[in-house]
Image 1 (tube, rainbow, N blue to C red):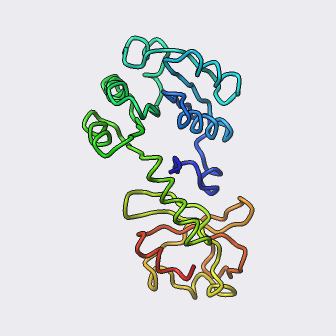
Image 2: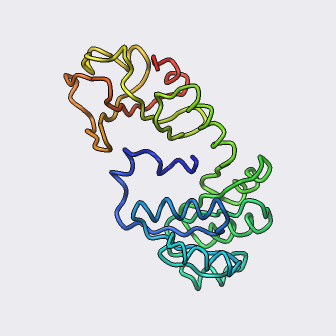
Image 3: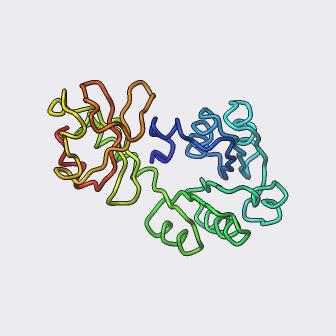
Length: 233
C-alpha cells in the first residue's frame, strides 16, 4: 500500500499535475516512496537528519531536492518550506518519539494531509492521536499483497480504501469472456461497481454498458473486499 495510493496503473493516468510532496526520513521505506513518486513525475523534497542518507538520495536522483534537517524542530521544517506543502509523508518508522513529534509539528503548522509510517499498533494509535490523516503499516501491507498475489493471481493491483473496501485491477475472468457489461450485472450479482476497463495502461472510464469484455482486458472495480472475493478469479 506497498504504499498503495500510487500503485494502480489506472490512477497513474489521472494523477494531479505538478503536485509536490515531502518525504521525511530517507531510510529504505522513505527512499522507496521518493523513488516511486519521482518516477511518476512528481516533485519530491526528501529530508533526513542523516547527511549521508540525504547525499545518497541526491546521488541516486530519486528526489527533486533533498535537505538535512531535524524534523522535531518546527523552525527547521518551516525554513525548508515543508509547512507550505499539501501532503507530507513521515517515513520515520523505528524512532517513535521523532516520528510522533514530527507528525505533531506538521499538523500544528496546518499541513492538510500527513501520511505517517507506523511500526506497531501502539505507534499507529499514537500517530492518529497527534493528528496523522493516514497511518500505514508497510510490513503488514506487503504481507497481505504477497498473500493476494499467491492466492489470487488474477488481481493485478489492489488499492485499500479502508480495511473493508478496495479498488482492484483484475484480469477479465474466463466466465466473463464475451459478455457485455450490461449482461454481467456486477452490482446485482456481486455488489460491485465497474469504473474502468483497459489494456496496456490505457483505460476507458465509465465504459459503455454494451461494451463486450474479453480475456486479456483489465477491469477496475470498487466494492467491499468480501464482494471482491466472490468474483470468479
